Amino acid sequence: MSFTDRTALVTGGSRGIGRAICLELARQGCNIALCYAGNQQAAQETVAACQSLGVKAVAYRCDVSSNEEVKHMTAEALKEFGAIHILINNAGITRDGLLLTMKEEDFTSVLDTNLKGAFLCMSALSRSMIRQRYGRIINLSSVVGLHGNAGQCNYAASKAGILGLTKSAAKELASRNITVNAVAPGFIDTDMTAALPEHTRTSMLTTIPANRLGQAEEVAKAVAFLASDHSAYITGQVLAVDGGMSM
Ligand code: NAP
Image (cartoon, rainbow, N blue to C red; front, side):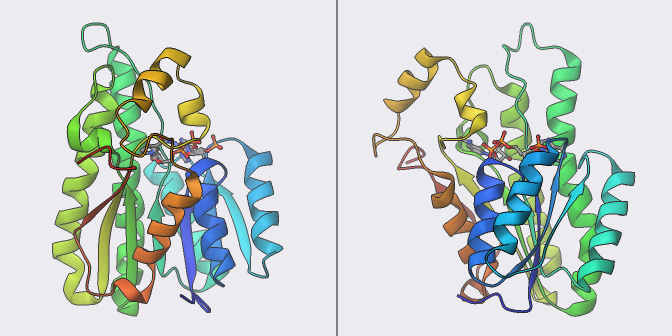
């Protein structure tokens, strides 16, 4: 796969799966615009790692749940890179809790970041993608969006919402040579899952046929395929990268 002369915008590219996606695309010659919420040091480390692979890379501080910030960031990135060909909506958070006790703000903040954030970025970049008659949009969902998970009503709703958003946008944009797909990771070894209590991690392992956590790089390879020209006739699909968890 080659991404020479292409630019990808990766939300939440500072750490975890987002960083692995930036590095995988950069390794294949893709220029990288990434955004992050607040961890500037991690963002700069990703930028430096991409640049050392010979591509242009810039980090933007941007809260994807803010329409104003997303509009500003995408305008800056379009000015800097000339065009954005690939959009990866990866930024995500968890605020776990049981339905009975979940606070309204924990529901809203997860939906705002995980689902509205993806909508805002797609909305901000779809016009330029239509104009250039080319686009690849990949949204990060989760096995939890496919099957639900006790203690994650907010997160599961956001990740199930991503699937409806993906399929609807895929139908709207297919005739403009823009594909929109989702990747649904299982249990991947990142800061997000490191925050889980040990007993939860141990019991999660028993639900994975492959009997191990996935690596961020394994998700990044699937994303890179959907971002490439090899997937030109694939749109509106959900690719699970989960060691068999969702079978
Ligand atoms: P992570 O390690 O916690 O990293 C989250 C990333 O999102 C960071 O770059 C963070 O920026 C950024 N971010 C958070 N809120 C943001 C906001 N409001 N605006 C902009 N950026 C924001 O997460 P991860 O495990 O790599 O997960 C990445 C994606 O995969 C998420 O959508 C997650 O739901 C999904 N996923 C993960 C797993 C898993 O097992 N890890 C499984 C299924 C799906 P800062 O560095 O500045 O904080």
